[in-house]
Length: 262
Image 1: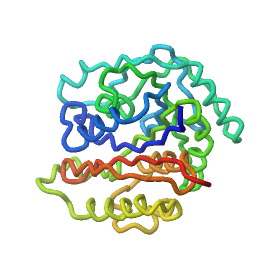
Image 2: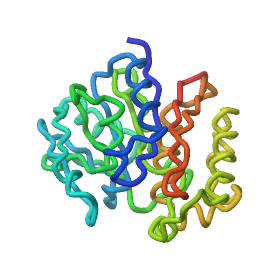
Image 3: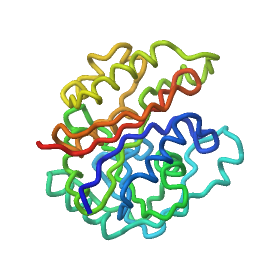
């Protein structure tokens, strides 16, 4: 198998499971076009720990880690198997890079994992495991986490960062009727960096991009993007999948990071 790309997906609100919008069909098309992975590794901000933890369950449960939504969401399951063997390889790869990585035999799949995977691999027939997001990261260490996971792509693992291109919960709760201009302007700046294959610019996003403080009042939903980009070193073919904007403020883009020459 040729080296798999890494992905960043915006998982938006949990309602993305029922309301695919523009992003859902694009993820579905991407899932059909990719070589079939041996497993999908997901880094999500909905599992944060002091150091990276890796879910090694053979049958990870679907975690409904949200409240106040349509009862139909709580009936959705994503019964994909885990992959304990490749999950242990992730522990080894992280430890080799100096991370205090440990296995977690009980962890299931939070909505940052299973909601976008409903669109990407709707049959739930590709094994999935999660790697937690360390709770104290900056741009450089988020990128380094991706670099540590990068060797798994050579073993058929699809390294996927799941976050949100914009994530302002206060604005989301206001439920604006139309798109807020700041979300589109911030998203356009990031898209330009991705299309240029400019990792340095990506790492400066939260300091340099327009409206960064409003797009990400806290950074945890942005770090998975840098993890995904870090997992594909060098200037490869980086692709933007325009997912539009939902709820006026949640940019839903996804990015495909193919590896280039370091």
